[in-house]
Image (cartoon, rainbow, N blue to C red):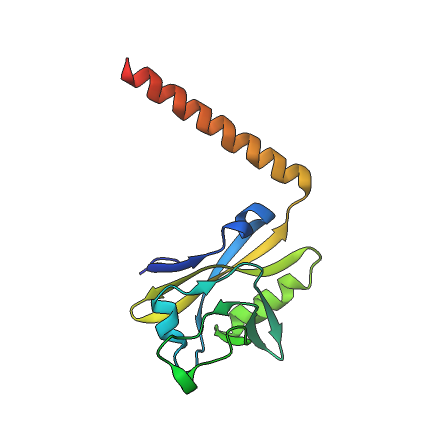
Length: 155
C-alpha cells in the first residue's frame, strides 16, 4: 500500500494553507495504553502540532489524543510527547534539511494502515502572506471555472 493511504482518522488542513509541502514521510507512532482505541474512535486533533528531532530520534509534539472513555485508570496524558518510528537514514536526511532556514516538520494526516496507526509527516517551508492570498485566488478562479462549466452542461 502506498504511503498516505488508509482509513484517515485526522487531517491537518491548516498545514496546507500555512506551508509549502516539499516531501512527505510515513512514520509509525509509539502509543501507550488506550491511545489506539481513541485513535480508532477518531478522537485526534493535529492542529498546531509539530515534529522535532532530538538525540537522533523523532518526536511528535502537541497532538491531542483524547482519553478513552472506558479506560479509567489506564488512560494517558492527552498531550504527551510521542515517539515516531522512521529509518535512521530518513531521520538523518530530515535533520540535515531542517537545519536550513524556513523548513519545519509538520504532521499532515493520521491514518490506520493494516491495523497500525501511521502519521504522514511533511517537510514544509512556510508561506508568506502574499503566497496565501495567491493560493486563495487560484482556488477561487478554479471554482468559478467549474461552476461555469456545470452551468453550461445543464443547457
